Length: 195
Image 1 (cartoon, rainbow, N blue to C red):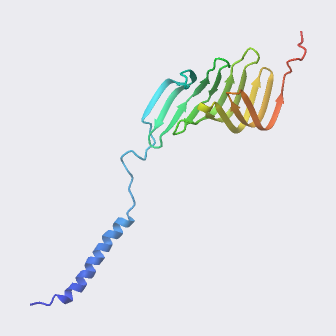
Image 2: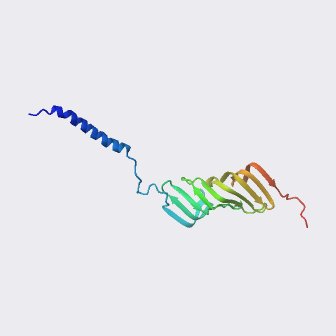
Image 3: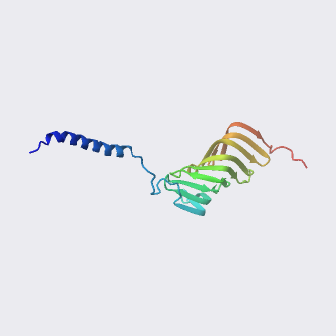
């Protein structure tokens, strides 16, 4: 009968080294590129020339959102807008339109960021002239009817104009507040008109 006791020790070392080699291979292996599409940022749907109507709790139209394109991305649940135009409609107030070249809607839909040639336009009323504000960026909270920016702003109303940096807009109260560096030229309603 052969003595296998002397061969067991080298075989056990060989088995341990083999096991450690396999463990080391899997522990240090980098994940290769995935080909299942999960790392791609492609839209899962595109809607062209669309209009969304938002109703309030009483069933009245609160605002409309028009866009040339709406693109939804499933990887981060984001939505991009091409040429968005958000219009608030009230029976007792002039319409307010917020438009831009592009926009981005937050995941929960509570915030819309407008970019590039942002324009805020309030129609004229019986007592006020039309007002238009221009800025490069604006963040809108559609359900709260508020908007704000930290960027430079130019507001025009008739022959009057106002420049500044940063702005708060509250459509419910129709208040527009410039935050800093305000410079204005205001036309007096009581000034004598030249013949």
